[in-house]
Image 1 (cartoon, helix red, strand yellow):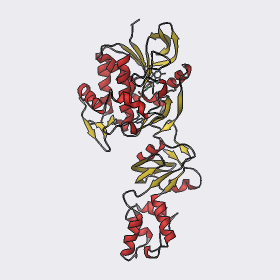
Image 2 (tube, rainbow, N blue to C red):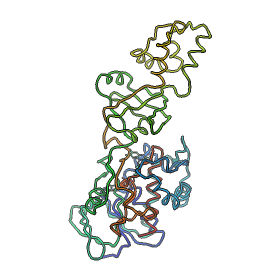
Image 3 (tube, rainbow, N blue to C red):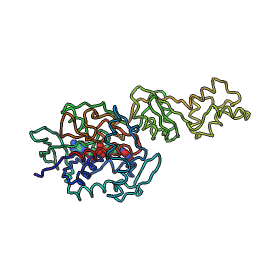
Image 4 (cartoon, rainbow, N blue to C red):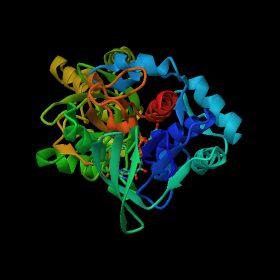
Length: 398
Ligand SMILES: Cc1cc2nc3c(=O)[nH]c(=O)nc-3n(C[C@H](O)[C@H](O)[C@H](O)COP(=O)(O)OP(=O)(O)OC[C@H]3O[C@@H](n4cnc5c(N)ncnc54)[C@H](O)[C@@H]3O)c2cc1C
């Protein structure tokens, strides 16, 4: 039996970085992965192109009960470190698409995974695929894992175990609640989990209105009392999707309302005033056609008097138009669930972990990184930046 410095559970973003960095430090790890290939989620990320970091990453781009926890990890591994790492070891040059989001210039997520597999094998790490970790027990010297490898039950032991087994989203990519179960077993606090970066559903009397706009996308500002995002929203036959909706979903809870400014770059009050100064001969619908598709304007006709001349608009009607466009209230019925979510919100409480090493305070030798922890990034490469940084930090300590 090989004497490993650590066993890493999960060959995803955090686990692969951890193994690669451990290898570069001359350590020996065993990575256990239930899938038949490493990096399943990386491969499909960013539509197969992998948005692997974000130039603007700060702790403000993360949802957590304690985002400041990230300072100690991000001071060890920065966005520049991510860029340099993939350039040096994978020959990957970054290209910025939008809002600081970096992708490989080749647009191929598989180049990111290949960078890791090359390093993992070249530095002599062991990677067992088709290996499900089913349980863990504390033993005199470290921990014993019960695994099912290629259909056979086995036990493996190590002094240190890294939980890089991810969160609950997307079952078919290997998602599991394993880290959460283990945290409960070892008496660690868990922040309530929920799907995040997830489309939201609309039911009830407004459902048909949203469905009638299915396929329409609008640049909007979506906000609540905590946060605001300016990106596209997409109407679908079951509700709302698109980047701005995914972003706000991480700050939304069932029963809450948020607001959409459908015309964030303009002030409709001023637009109407100008139109009145110009004679106000056009109809409300004609004015709105300057800013929205015909389908959208027709749909807005459910709420607004489209056939009134701007010159004849009452104060009340003008206010109705301005409020509907700039303060469109949305009360989703729910979300599309873990299989449509990009990440999990909540997870193992940061209060349980040493902020520098990500080792459990109560259970020396157990480490937790990536999505399993109560650190959830915005859409835009932040989740990978956290996963890489966590993998690096853990590798220093194992
Ligand atoms: C569709 C989609 C697109 C995304 N695009 C982006 C993007 O472009 N940019 C970005 O920053 N983030 C993106 N994300 C989020 C990002 O993929 C995750 O935040 C990140 O992969 C989390 O890394 P992790 O290592 O914690 O978990 P994962 O990468 O999910 O890895 C966990 C691994 O552990 C394995 N595992 C789980 N349980 C066990 C067990 N019991 N035994 C053995 N193995 C186990 C799993 O099979 C998996 O391979 C996307 C997510 C999705 C779903």
